[in-house]
Length: 148
Image (cartoon, rainbow, N blue to C red; front, side):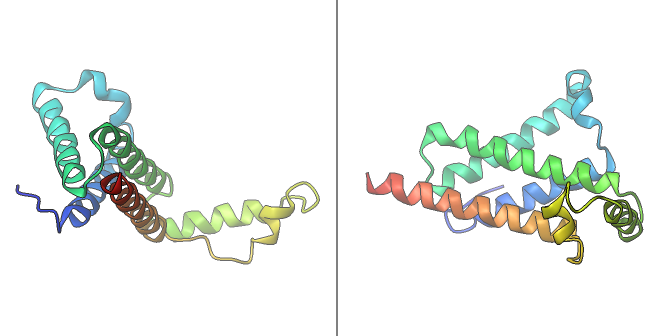
């Protein structure tokens, strides 16, 4: 897989989406990381290698690559695991969460109860925003480092 300077952001987005999908289906895989088979460990290493390759093409300083790589993995894992918690019918599960939240005392939870009328964002919306924010930050750090 070749990554060019122009498509590093697309590549990172695709990798993050793939990692998210794995954690959606296998949310406890992170707990099993020390017990991975050799082939699973190779597959995980390939994913991290691809992340680092894309980040190298972003222009980030070398010392920043592992930091941003971990942030990307953490976001994808967190969103994927969170999606799994809502089960096969996320709309129904979110409605149940909202019902429980409505029972909260507004004096004790003023900020949460003030926003109860707002829809709970979709996991897709949260994930897309998080990845876009990370890509913008990577671009800003890479740009600043190229000027110094």
